[in-house]
Image 1 (tube, rainbow, N blue to C red):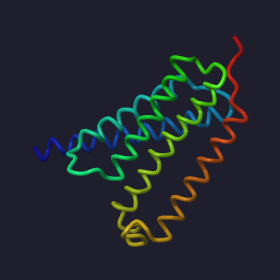
Image 2 (cartoon, rainbow, N blue to C red):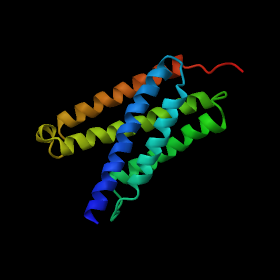
Image 3 (cartoon, rainbow, N blue to C red):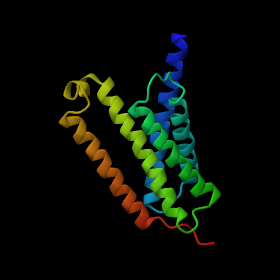
Length: 161
């Protein structure tokens, strides 16, 4: 069973990392008004897979991780609906961008949390996760994503029908 859980955790982590990398590649495209459909689909699928597998770990109580998973799932469903159901028409373009970028942000947010928990050098700087180095790192991530989101909303245009 332990080997099974370790394999499942590895699968979850790989999904998360693929989601982050593909999301960053897609985000770069969105900044240039390029949807990058393959990268976007990979990002949405693997990030959704990450949130779903996150709910399959043993749950004994409601934790911040579960809350982030619920919020991320809601935003991912919004992004998927905006892109594939409503085809980015009208306000759905902005809905897609906001939902997709928030989903990517939360995935990176969790990556930073995990880095401070698992990387000894980072954990030494913020062993409780509430010290200034952790807050500064998360602040930089937040500012980067808010800036990218703003720029995407200003620059991304869908092809006219």
